[in-house]
Image 1 (cartoon, rainbow, N blue to C red):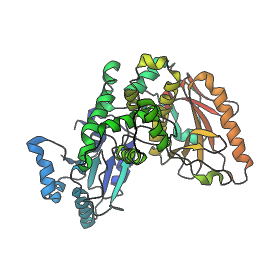
Image 2: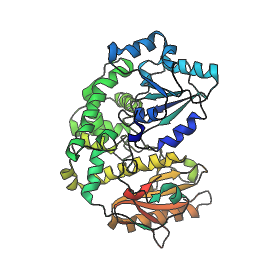
Image 3: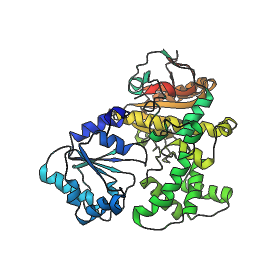
Image 4: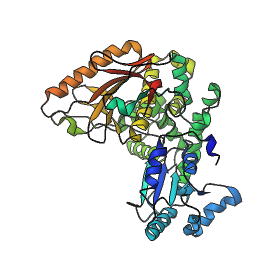
Length: 425
């Protein structure tokens, strides 16, 4: 590959570290998020099992003798390994034989059934999750504020560029797909819809050879889009489909299809924060629903920039999804994990970043600058509740991530305010 044209990704440093630690690394994530490009940047040779050349010659070769496709300079990239699942065991066996680090990079845009995979690869093959581009990776964030430093209580005030609402909407609709960055906005908006059609129409069947009702899958995807950035249960999704689309889907079918979406990396839900944070308070254990990129929800809702300008409620949920996508990418780059908090007393935190040492930071996400004061009050009140509880562990930092603000600063009450277009890892 032409390394001069490579756009750096957050996963680069961790991939380099893993190649020095493990015999092989599996880079997983949704199609078209840049897995192959990034993996090729770190590899010395490669083979694509999804290449149709020669009537899928590479795939046939791997099926006949998986060990043959392992020959090449290390690190050797094996792209779309899930097309021939026995390749996994062949890689694991080769790593065991040689004991060398950084031999292989596997990429996959679907998690296959365990059928055909005999060994987990534990200790030999490490897994890394890759996502569509964050705003900093795509060049749409100035990166004046570091999330890692923010979580450590460090914030240098900085003026940031004035952000127009139309620009934020454009970033949401376009999404973080590397191939869309150079497209005009109206063309970039077409990509997510066709992306979903291709994945549902082809990849679902190729994953395990089972034909499913793609029409009902589309209904469930639309329901997920209507419930983006919420903690809707499986039954809520079922009822939503019945009420809005006048169709009925069995709860077990909903569960099965959600599992498929997860295996295809279409969804990327936000788990609830650990119960142990406040053992005296019952914490809800529902995940917050997210697609891997907010542009997919836009496509399913047929949400145009003009339409979102007239539907600020939907725009608010989509903006939250954009911010939480980026917070997850940034946090994971330094060993952090993104959660949300919701208890049975009605208290919520949009995003919680837990650091490797166990400390955690609370984030509220607001589109408009006029919402900052109320968000900061809510964070301070919740922190006070944690401090009063002898079993509680209060947050180490509080922050409001906003859309329409022109500065990053620390308020007199200690709450940080940071525009999403100024944030980096």
